[in-house]
View 1: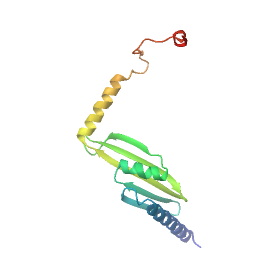
View 2 (view 1 turned 135 degrees about the horizontal axis):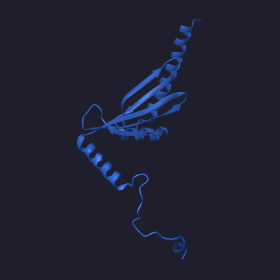
View 3 (view 1 turned 90 degrees about the horizontal axis):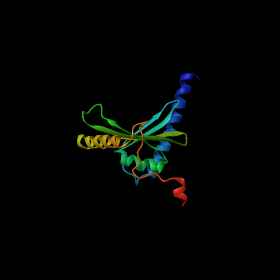
View 4 (view 1 turned 60 degrees about the vertical axis):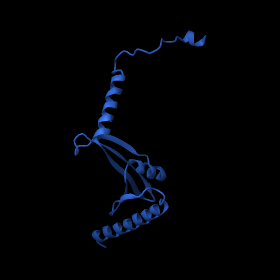
Length: 147
């Protein structure tokens, strides 16, 4: 058997595994929010399905059900001036298939500006590294605490 035919047969087996896991997963999660996209990938070396809920809140529900720990990133949107973006993503492996859950939300200008103001205010309230810290109340010595 040629290496090419072996690779095709491995891809077919991977596609069957991805399809079976995806069918089972979707059948068992009918109560969760719908998905914008389901992207199966199967090659001779990879078995993967990507689930894209409609936003971070829905992705958190999917992740909780699947036991996935999500990473959250918030930053400026490079394609929309004055806006931000929130991205959540994570993955797990079910029966040899990597299941990725990820979603993106565009943060509109007014909300993004408010988040930036909040961050600036927090930075002003946080002592700089190496700066002296002044407690708001007098220090309590060990002797006073024991009394």
